[in-house]
Length: 103
Length: 151
Image (tube, rainbow over all chains, first blue to last red):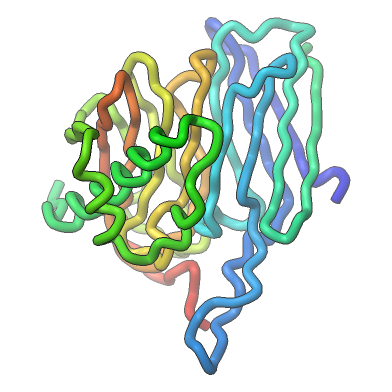
């Protein structure tokens, strides 16, 4: 699952703006004809963003987030040299994480 | 804006239920069942405890009026409120109404943007926890081809 995460940051007044793109099917599964229920879903359940090791954002997701999730948020007071790490886990045990150093 | 009050209240109540339950557990983890709870009634019952909730124009939810394709609908929430702890996104007609819960540290501004699936025309709502209250913003979105498709 390597390289599933792309992170870009832009400096804005007072901090940074983070744009993250994750490659993931975010599948709701197929409808089982017998039971009418959706089976075999495959989606990211948890996204964690840490700044210098401290969790600053946690996303708990359903399969209602679109395929190849996009996430944008803003962090106050982030400085050049800070380490920003984004990781995800999905409902089938898959995971990935990516760390960047702010320029 | 012509938001059906009923659907709005319903969406808001679901989110409040979740945030209420989640805050009892602390910020760390949401209870199991948040996303599998297809019964809004249960969630509402849990909600009507200690959370004060109100529609608030400081919660700005941006979404298209019409979404050609419900599989990919951009949403953003910009909340001009102090001490925001959590932003919850809800679509009242989705099979799983709660799309996402974002828990934010103080360093993170009250802003998130993402892309969601909408099963059909619905109201989307953002529920923002700030200083122990839940502030809500919502918007109807007309969906031409539903995401989360049944086929």
